Image (tube, rainbow, N blue to C red; front, side, top):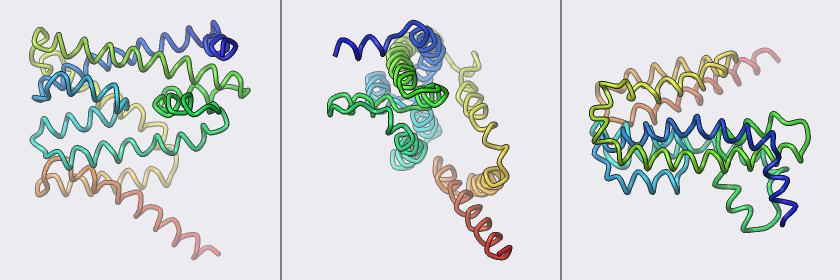
Length: 231
């Protein structure tokens, strides 16, 4: 056990994980402020960060609730965005710990940042260090940021004045850009965005985002038919 903790907190990965966690904590503050502005009780925002712990899903759920959407559409959108963590878990299986308790903790820490840091390493040992150092750091700072945002929400006032409402869309767009290099993914994005835009005037808040996933299905269908014709 002592050796495991020692390897988890090597100096390089401790530094990298700390800096990344600190940066993510700023978004945690934004989430707390926006949650209060959307009418979500502070304790619910804090519990959401501790148990759900996936920023994109949390921001999406709060945005839908703030726009007047119902809990079902908010939950559906959050689950759809969180499904990517399941794909991450499959690729992270080789570095997961063997003990049941450690696996439960590790499962909570499978997020964008910890997965990216682990995949960037050259050995399994370094991947494990990067995963734990990054995951634990982001978890601590994200939750501290949420708590801070909840309690200072009234002091900050209207998040629109400070431009905090643009923080999540900007971050999400930054995550999206690298994927647009792939032709199939670009097609999926275009079809999905068209479906969402057509649905916004006639569907309740949140449902256009859920329907946008059909863009990926349509794109896969088109690609499959194209490959069949080429054979």
